[in-house]
Structures are given as C-alpha cells and as structure tokens.
Length: 533
Image (cartoon, rainbow, N blue to C red; front, side, top):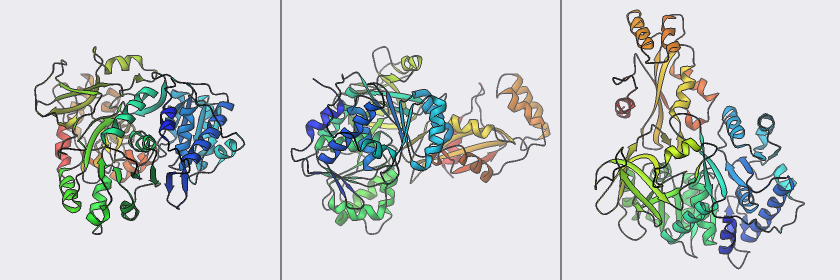
C-alpha cells in the first residue's frame, strides 16, 4: 500500500471535488478538484526537471494557494519539501541551499536575481519564481503539463520534508520528517480535536513552519473541508471571518491582539467550537481574559519541529491554564533528570518524547542525531517541565537558551557572533524575556570595549590568558580607540544581516556580563534582570 502522505490526503478528499478547499481573501475559491489538478501539473513539471524521489525542493515564498500546491506536488512526486521563511537573508539562504543541495529552488519574484546567484554557487540546477500574487515562472512552466499524475509510491520511513530548526550553538539543523511521521501526527490531531464535516478553519498562520503547514493545513486536508486561507493575521479581518468559521489556530500574539479589540467577544465567536494556541507560551492572563470575554476556553498544545505535536489539552475535559495538557495518543512523554532517571510527579526535569510522529534525525548530522536520542529511543527536547499527578504537563523553561518569539525560533549564538564582530564591542549575550505579544522578545546585553576602564583592562587580559572569553576579543580591550556603538547602531547593523524576527527589540549595555566560576555567562541572571524591566 502506498504510504505517500499525499495519497492519505487524497483518500480523504470529498467525493464532490467541486467542494471548496481554500477560500482566498479576494473571495476566490480553490476546490479540491483545483488542488488535485494543479498539484498534478506541478508534480509533472518537477519530474520533467530531472528530479528523482528523495531529491529536495526548496521554497522561499509568501503564503499563497499556489505555495501550498507546490508543497503537495513535491510530496506527491516523491520529493522532499524544504520550506524557508521569506524573511531569511542572503547568508541564511546560502547556508540552507548549500547544506540541503536541492534540485529545485523556488523563490519570490523580487528575489530571483539573488536566488539564482546563490543557487548557482550551491550547485542547485533549477530556479523558478513564484510571486506574492501566485504567478510567475513556476506557474507558467507547469501550465502545459497534464493534470493527471500518478502519486509516487513511498514507504512510511522515506522522507517527505526537511525543516531547519534552531539550537543555541552551532549551525542550523535540518530535521528530517518522513511520510510516516507526518501521517501519524495528522491522523492523531484530526481525531483528537474532533474535526467534522461542518468545520471551517480560519487559517491566518504562515506556512513555512510546522504550525501553519503540518498542523493547520493537514487537519483541513484530512477533513476534506474548507479553510479561509488568509495571507497573514489581521485582527479586523479575523473579526469579519470568525462568525463564518468553527476552528482557529494561532500563536499567543494573535489572541492578545484580538482581545485588544472592543468588538471581539461572544458574538464574534457564535459558530466557533475551538481555539488552539501554540508555538510559544500563552500567558495565564490571556487565557483567563479570553475565557471571560468569549465564554470559550483556549486549547493550548505543545510540539516541536522535530515531531509535530506531542501534547494537547483535551477537547473534552479540563483545559488547564498554564499547562500544555496531556500526552497525545501514540506519543510517550517522560520527565527525567540529567542522568535519564524518571522523576516523580511535579518534579522539574528534562522533557523527552517517543512516538511514530518523532523525526528520524538531523540532515547529514549523524553524530548530532545520536546525541539527541536516548538509548531507548526517546528524543531529548531540550525543554524543562513537570508532570502533575493526573498527567498534565507544564513547560518550565529550556535547558538550552533557545528564544521563541512570535512562534519563531531564534539562535542566540548566531546573533551574538554578529554583535561581537562589530567595532567597539567586547562581547554580548542574547536572551529572551517575557513579552505579552510575542511570548518572548529577543534582547541583547552588550559590553562595549570603551566601557571597560583602564583598571579593568589588566583583569580582562588575565581572564583571556586563563581561557575565559576568547583571547582576541578580550585583549582588544587595550585598544581604547574603538568606537562605542549605540543601541540603534547595533540594531541597524543586524538588520542588514538577519531576518527581522531575529533582531533584538532592546539592546542593553553593561560593564560586564555575570559569570559562574567556570567563566560561563549566567543567562538566567540576565533574564531575571531584564525580564522585570
């Protein structure tokens, strides 16, 4: 039996293919028949370019119906889909293309010149463009091909997607997700959240990551029903469409902004049966205010790029604020200490997960893959949490210093290296601090060279000689002529090099960073200090 994920979706499409799948902002509807035919043409095009099953297709495009069809066509043809955030900048894209070596790169029309240049340098054979309006050479090239396409036969263990995920050190890691991984999670979520034939999803998430693509879209495709497919979240537009919808998925930011509107309340949600929140922690005050305003309770869940969803508050039963609910069917979750010993109820420890949905490893990183799995097959999430006696899980923090802002992951080290290279900077530390809108705000704490006085220079040199901070940076303190950057200088420089969501919202300057006896920066102290501001 064919285990291609697209075959699973197609088996759930409505018998009447004229039924709507995506309803766009301009009122146009893509039917299931349209999706089937367009993905067939696009799959034929991809195969005609010489790509073989298992080859990668990278896409850095905005959210359009055609972009979703590109994903479906890629897995339908047996290729591996690699979605990339449209906000990524030149150096980031160069790394992803060089690491994944896709056979096809689809970029935005305005990025075609740079995309072609980077693709050539990375050895990518084909580059096509897809505009923000859903037109471009990708669509033109696919147009002459037949609608019919026999879905490629794939096994459960064969790759369907690679998503680059964050860590706190080293380079980005490509999480490899199989057809079986994605199918297992799609089946579980569709059933657990009680999707039915009358459901209409209001889809305002981006589709370059797990939440918008693998959670939201997969639930709809498994259900064979319609979704309002909006290009982005807009509170005013949400207020127009919520009365016509039954399910909404969002990050905490969306709920904060809905609550800021006096027009939002029970009347807006008269047909709604389910609001789901994830990708970042939901503040208790948001949870409580939403319940008070609408009479409905947000369902918070927990997952990662490396396996989709792991836990969820129940559809029927108590949705407990401040928790991410219970382990989902088919997923085992345990809390252990640093020696992998199982902890008792309510003890804080490391969260580990195991199940059919959990990824198979990191692309071309076998050592890292082995490091992140236990001997009995549990994945080390890097998150800290505790489990109540009745099984509810609360996320306490992260053992790694990953920052999640607006549902997007940020490497502190990536930003720190760029700040440290700026003239007049001795060193820096990047942290996440609580933010009512974004969950966490990226924040930089910087030591200027000029802020280290003459009496402190010798101490800095001594620390360098003893193996503390990198020698070159500390010894450079002696250079008293280095300019002193301001907060705006640091932010302006980073904006030339990084996607906007990675840019610090604030830059604080200090004379020194707090360190423990081993010379390691104590980011917990920085989070306490600046999280209260």
